[in-house]
Amino acid sequence: MSNPDTISSPFLPLPDGISILGVEASDTGLVVSITCHLPFALCPGCQQRSERIHSSYRRLVADVPSGGRQVTLALTVRKCICGIPACSHNIFTERMPEFVLSYARLTNRLRQALQDVGFATCAEAGERLASKLGMSVTATTLLRRTRERSVPAPDVVRILGVDDWAWRKGMTYGSILVDLERRCPIEILPDRQAETVEAWLRLHPEIEIVSRDCAGAYAEAARKGAPHAHEVADRFNILKNLREHLRDFLLRKQALLPEIEHVASEAILQKVRERLQKSSVVFPPANQEKPHFRKMSASLRVYEDRATPQTQLTVTQERKQASRARRYERYEAVRELH
Image 1 (tube, rainbow, N blue to C red):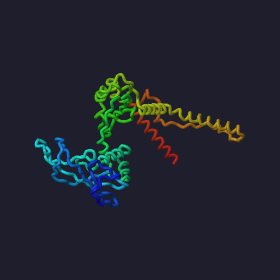
Image 2: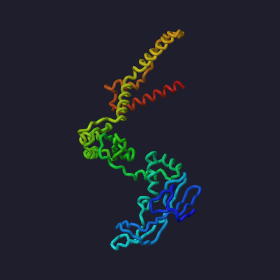
Image 3: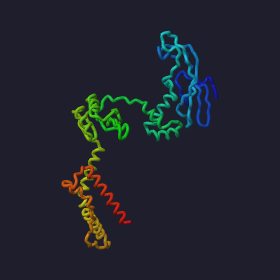
Image 4: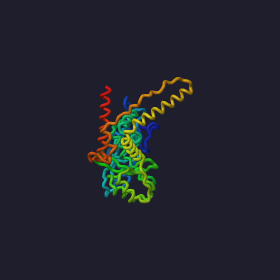
């Protein structure tokens, strides 16, 4: 299809000065030939108008899909001659920054759409979603597009969250700063040293609350960089500390757990018998045999007598030893039952 008089189309909106020359359709996509018909072009060096056309060439640019099909724009670009002798651009290519950037292979609106898909999903999921929408992109390209968008620094941060960030897990770490009121990251620091975080905090005296983990570096940075702010522990570390202390308590009291379990079980059965008796249902009498308690392995008693250990072990070594003993005891029980 070709129509030289076509200026634009409601299905393919174009900036002023760009017209559609023709459309070639296929099963997989559309190729739309467009050109710029403005009488002049602005020189990127001196910003002066030029009406002297030197030559033209064709460049292919990907655009947003139409009806699930990929759209490729065959853009005819003109080269113009600058009439200013002192200008460094004797011959320049006309620019259309509001539509497509120089040397870009996709339009600005397609770049925006890919960034939105990347922020809404992730790299791998975004690649699968984009292919369904008619946008051909890889996960790596999607990550690169999302990194192109700059996040403006906030003017005021009242509640700040600080945590470590893995540039390369197990080797290189940084610090990520999050505005907890807006729920978005605002800064990524190159390391997790106290001096780096302290220097950033001194630039934001408006901070009222600092939520951090239990790392000593962040505690020192908050104490020196924002002495007026209240320090709180984040939810993850609170639950982690509670879990660790509860585990240590149960391991120290493991010898009493079988007895507690038996007493609780008998209490539940007694309540069931009372309810069934009220409802005139005959319930078999309770077993009067002497209860048999589970025996705790001798290797687990390391938590019972930490004050006088046979060998000087650290807390971490004791935990590993007790954990291994529990696993071995379960393994032996499984073998015996089998």
